[in-house]
Image (tube, rainbow, N blue to C red; front, side):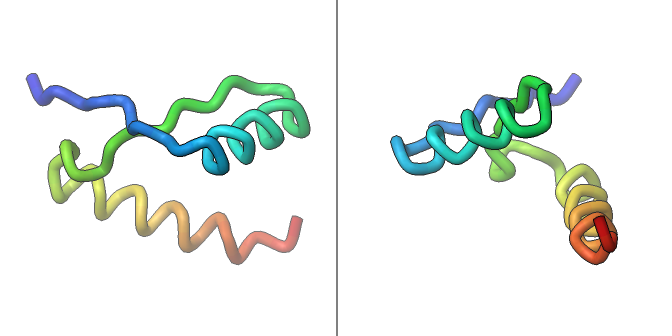
Length: 56
């Protein structure tokens, strides 16, 4: 099984995550993409680009 690590965030990134969590009412987890397989990373990129074009 592949080991996935939690990302190390700086203070500004952590504040942004906390703000997003508060606004959307969920807990977010930031993963270190350098520890993910290329398949997992590509899936995220593909999903992320699709989501960013969503009108809402």
